[in-house]
Length: 254
Image (cartoon, rainbow, N blue to C red; front, top):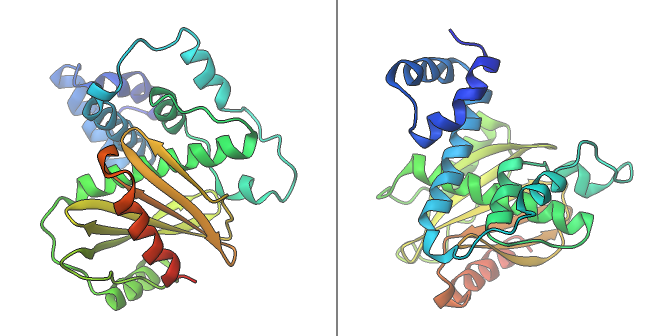
């Protein structure tokens, strides 16, 4: 079996579908046995799908400084004060930073950039999990979801069931890794849209809204728990649908 180092140079052509059959089989075999490389491939595939699906909105030429700004946005060290809550809960991801760059999103300030990068990473996770889940799943019982997260993932979280199963239904409950441990990822279908809620322990993101390549995000915190809502909502909706979901979630966790 090929090593991770040998797979590295094949990853991008593998994701782009520009690889011969022998090399593809070698990568497939490695990914089946290597979770870190498999996670990387899934992340790159999710970013590729996001960018391709939003091609019509991403018009114009990228600025000459794009590559430098992407690379420069990912620090080789973490120059933040010891004990910083942002440093504890926001991982840096080149894929997330690239997604922000492609979407033309640049924010000033270290904390703002960290939180924007984290929101972009959760957009990627949202896409990956919904792609894997697919569509047409029946609503999931909130109590069963809570028990599953606790027993299987060691995540203790109260799970909102939704306001009306015809309009807002819980369809899956998962757990994702982040720098501070594990966070709950709750997947909902809201009036035909796919919406994710990430519940992050011991985190206090600044309250804000960000548009990330056709996805709207809402960040807030309460009682040292961070919440990030991600939804694939068209701009024509002017955020009304996401605002309604955010209001419901905030009231639930108050």
